[in-house]
Amino acid sequence: MRSIETAYIGGAFVPVTGDEVVDIIDPASERPIGTLRLASRDDARRAIAAAGRAQEALGVSRKTERLEMLKSLQAAILGRSDDIRDATVEEYGAPLARARWISRYASDCFGYSADALADYDFQRRIGTAMVHMQPVGVSALIAPWNAAAGTICSKLASALAAGCASVIKPSELSGLQTQVVAEALHAAGLPAGVFNFVCGRGSDVGDELCTSPRVARVSFTGSTATGKVIARAAVETMKRVSLSLSGKSATILLDDADLATAVPMAVDGAFQNNGQACIAGTRLLVPAARISEVEAIAASAVAALTVGHPSDPETTIGPLASAAQFERVQGFILGGLAQGARLVAGGPGKPDGRATGFFVRPTVFSDVDNDMDIARQEIFGPVLSIIPYQDEADAIRIANDSIYGLEAYVFSTDVERARRVAERLAAGSVLINRIAPELRAPFGGVKQSGVGREFGVFGLESFLEAKSIAA
Image (tube, rainbow, N blue to C red; front, top):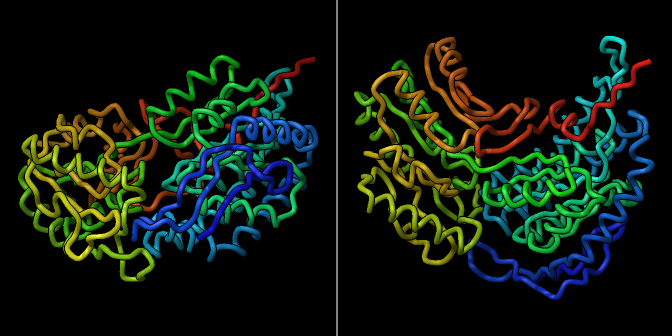
């Protein structure tokens, strides 16, 4: 049992002043493995003040200094990659292979930002004006529970590259992962206050970050509902806000797709990270004439998956992160049946032999109409809906018939045709014949999937303001 009672403020781990203590639960066993004392609003204020003090020097630092900081952080995270992996398995339930990827990505984020920074021109002439790109100032970085280490490091890397000191608010459901990341970053030896961690409730710590006039920028990743609350709070002090929010991504199998290859990839894309991914392709759009073929291949693909303890190298799907998430997913599976969808694989309840732990049965529905709840709402679990379409135009219409627009996937043997379809999809990113994202390209959504972009040069610029000086 590990007891976490500190925040990271001003370059040191300091006791938090909050009264609430929450249990850290192993989702595979449902047993407590630690406790986390949550930070208070006063702790958030202390962190904001520390970032404000650090901002003065960081804001005028040279590019070479920031590059050295990024390289130091990359090495520090790499040095703790095994610990980050283990915490992700233990606290979150990520399968071992996914946890390894997360730990590597957390380190790579700093390298990607260093690459973007190295080639970036902070001054450029436009007409008679000289345009200076300047750091926006103290930034609040709010990370979700489903991708704690990677999201923290990605946001911090962009903020630091731009010269912005940060206050990081991770989810209270990721206390163990956050502590390991904070310890690793501390070992890099950066100036005090350049980054700070306060893990607390959104109602006090989050609210303070979003309303404080000393915070200039908020970068949030999480649900659309919470993103709207943050945007409303931030507008009172005209903070710069970027929101990476919910998704209900469509995967389109064009009529010339190689189903034997595409369908298993589509299942993997829908069930990545135990299905707890905003980019999961949970709507599988299939030519009506090929539905039966797709159903058979999908059922075989699901049967080949191993649902098990996340530390087992053979496991492909681990438990969901919490009891609340388990109940949410069960509700959607039962709702799909009630609304007339037909099971191809899985269903309600836990997998055989998994009486303990927040495990769900990987589930595939067919006979799904795009108006059903399982096709409209983000489920955040391994639940895939097969939806028929009549022709290419109908596929595009169905894919775009959503309040969300984060990511989309297109499979075809004709890449140019797939590109033409991709251009017509209302999504921030489209992947063709692949499910692995390009982590240097801009990432973000349209419609209610968010505002703004992250990663690479676009992530760097999201922490900068343009000042024009004409003489």
